[in-house]
Image (cartoon, rainbow over all chains, first blue to last red; front, side, top):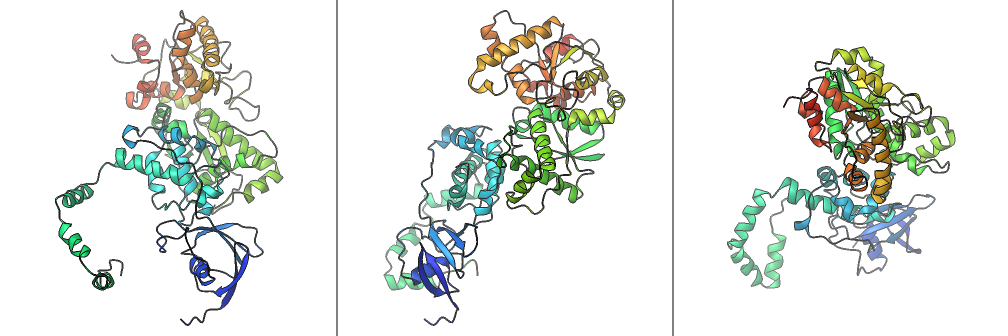
Length: 228
Length: 300
């Protein structure tokens, strides 16, 4: 494959590589011979598996990005965070109540938040992370759920938080409480579940299961593309 | 209507909702629209006294940025912000002072204030609602009274953060009169008592309830000796320690005489005739309504 892009120098875990400058961090690492066993998922910016920290040459700033979304820059020092050893509490949603202190009970470290906004700065989704952490702290479940809605749990906020809060788990609990107790069930979801249970898609699934690989591939390539 | 920025703080949205509801209603009656910023964070409690601690000033100053944004957008009529919780008032005002008086820390606070569109100028003035009322004039308050609280003996309880340290407090540190003046403007009788500035036990309420119970017992004993019918406060933590925590006092002091504790804004709502929705007495423990009915100030 021909690539006329300018060649740039990047450092993956300290090792120097020359790669085409129009690649994403993920593709550049693969170009350099790196094989992903962790830290890669959907490759479309949705799954949050490829959290990456980098620093540009000459800058003191440690920055964060999704490797599948961020284009490499000359002099970039790159380290992946394929797994974040974060505390995640267990709870039974049926036994919780959407009270002001519910989130704080499960994530008491929330009260250590200093409103420094480092989490917001680190978020590759441009979410106002500190604002939803603060909303959780004061028991505003609705605001916490709404502000954290676009979170993909990449973990960069938790890696950077000086108070060692795990914002993405906090936001997830807020969204679960909001969905179950405040917003309530959505009729269109209930309708669809009923359709599934009544077998609306059974024939279609059966058909797909019986197709050979070539037919399946053709079906995939000629599928209806909603976003185009 | 004068539009004034209003910083609620966490408690005003939960345990002290009756404080917020009664404030918004009484302010409106007095021609003030309280404008809450769309975004706000914890006030930063408690004020940090160490000189090398910049981190703890980020939260309060960030809230003052929100006020400045409201002002810049023309959503409020001044660069003032009114608070209700004594802790929020104290923390915001003291950090504001640190920012304006210590140029080294001002620079560090600015350097670490991530992801803000504007730099804080230092020009926001932090006020307590009591100060707004005093500035307006007690006569104005009196004019709004339709249901004077005649025959009610009210003991103002200040606690610590509303008055200290000197230069931050809303009134004279040792001889405050601001709540007495308000109570009298509402038609009630202000009762002075020796422990009006005694500590309520503060955050000991979390892990040493007995400390709070002992202090509360002393405070109530003094209030009783001064023949107070009721205590009035401006701090959600004082209200909690002297109100709902009375059950702990009762456990330790069986002959204890219970006295209701309300926010000053609730008495205002009652005197202004704004109804139970505004006065929100249902949120108080113990319930002050039987006493108010006995005094003929509340309908059966």
